[in-house]
Length: 335
Image 1: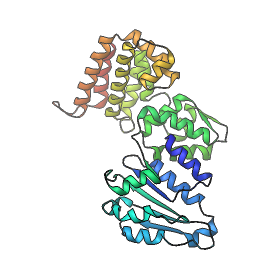
Image 2: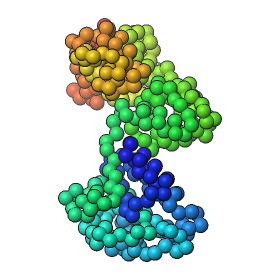
Image 3: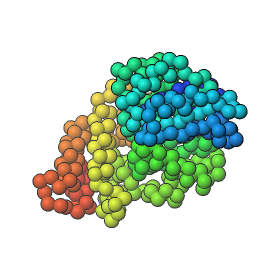
C-alpha cells in the first residue's frame, strides 16, 4: 500500500518515468489506481486527443506497442500509451528489451497486467525492475483493510470509527474496489469533515450495526448469552446476508486470536494489537475474553467451530438449517 502511495505521489508531482509495469496478480485496486492517476495527470484534456493511446493486449503485439511508444508527442511535452489486458503479451515480453534499453523519453508507457505475473527470470522483467517502475501488488490481509479504509477516508477529508471500518470489512471482505465504491457512496451523502459512525454505515450501506459477526464475537467474548442468541436468531432469519460459512470463519479467527493472546508475555495494548493484527482500540476485548475462556477452552472451541463448519457444508450429515447449527455451536462454546 505504501509503495503504491509513493508512486502516485511522484506522478502527481510530475516526476514521470518512461515505463510503468503494473501487476495485479490477485488484488487489482492499486494497479488500476496508478494507471488512472497517470491517465488523468500527465496530459491535459486538450492534449489527450493526439497524445494518449489506449491499447489492449489481446488485440496488439508487443511490436505494435513499441511502435506506438516510439512516436513523438504533438503539441505536448509527453504522450501516454496505456496497454490494458497486458497479461496477453507476457509471452512476448522479451520483445520489449530493445525499447527498454533505449526508451523514448517523451513517452509514458504503461502496462496493466491482471491476474497473472511475468516470469521473473526473463531479461525484460529484470530490466523493468532495475530501470523503471515495476509494481506488483502484494496479498492484502483482512487485518490490514480497516487501516486502509481509515487512511482513504482521511485523505478524502473524513474520519471513521474503528467499529464502522470493521463492519465494512466484514460485509465486503478484502476487495478494495468494492470497498472504494461504498466509500464514494458515503462521500456523496456526507459532508467533508464528518466522522463516519456505525449508524451512518447501517443507514447508507445496509449493514446492521447491532446484528453482525463483529457484535457476535464481542458478545461471545463477554459471555453474554442473551445478546449472542439474539444475534444468531437474526442471522437465521436473514441467512443470505449472514451466511454460516462467514460466521464460522470469523469465529475461528477470533478464537485463534484468544489462543495467541494467552501465549503473549507482553500484554500491553500495543503488543496485543501488533501480534493479533487488530486495531489497538479492540485490544481490551481480548483481555476480557481471555478471562472467560482458558487456553484449553479456546482450543476446544476451535474444534467445535470446525465441526459445525463441516456440518454446514453437508459433510457427514443431512442438510440442517443454519439457525439450528448456530444454536448448537453457541451451546458448545458458551456452556
